[in-house]
Length: 461
Image 1 (spheres, rainbow, N blue to C red):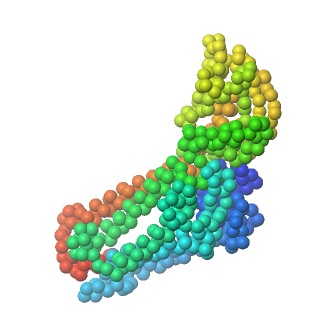
Image 2 (cartoon, one colour):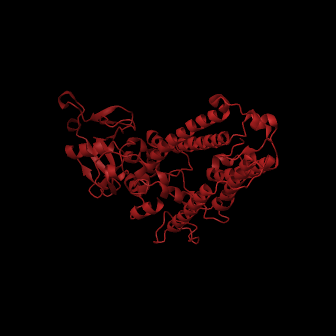
Image 3 (cartoon, rainbow, N blue to C red):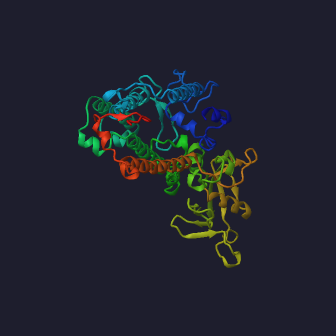
């Protein structure tokens, strides 16, 4: 999948057409864990670990292809030679010690978690990971130190990611060793039905469901760990005016508003455009976001409307609506002009109010328009936030908004997690109430030394 995305990725303009607008899934998460370089001499953001050139997109893809091939061969080998006498139990019955197998797997997984946090993320033996500022403007692959205090919860969120992996890995390795070296009591063994491999597997299924639920929910609602530069922003950024407030703050801080608008970063302006809102595109509209409005060519500029000497603004379209009445209000919120449905019954039309339009920043900076058709055209576009020029023919766009990879990830993983949840309930019920379902008592099986389980497919009779 990563190789396919690399083949079709257009890296000519990473500011106005990032890969989350091009509909990529694997590429953003590869960048997130520190892979930002390519063999073809391009990179995502500025990399502080450019000396670590071995871990490129192409090399990582090759490593995963080789690993998946080895796993496939291993699975095929174990499928053919499933009856190996690895464990010998009571009276030479072939048994599996599920409690010890669980401890081994938990120890190995926890060791991987610890090494990922201590070595990979903190940069001792790895490239680090992607970090950025609050507004997603200065992102790059950096080395981050672990956070060792609760105070860092408020000032260093990225350090907590490393601390979480280190502490969770140490705790998991300790619990894994404890399960390997100790035996459960007979009451706990019976209560949790540890002799049933189906119950053990159902428990692992529900743990995956919990992880999927947490990640999908936090991805949709938004966390600082899920960088805007990699997967786009959440719908709540538009609803709360997060980026428009930052733009207004930068403009109001300067005395020369025209010059200040010319200094606003294009990346920040792109975030203040409703077309990048994941809630505006339906999940069943196939294709990337650029299939909806086209490939962004340039930022036209900020629209500034005025009646006489009174500045007015267009009321922006909420994320919930597909169509919205166009209303222009002053700073106090009073309606000053609109585009009415019935012009004969309105006294606020743009023709009657003689609304003027100024373009600040962008390619049309300093332009003044008084023609009502042009003012109406830009007023309609201003409902979507900042105004951009799009190339619609290059990708065959149809003008219908698509959703970003963020929404697709959340939706698909929630559906997958629910399947895991229902699968857990099904297999847990089968394992706990096996005697009720089949009508056959399994009391004789527990006469065997507890802590051991019959090998799958083996029969005592």
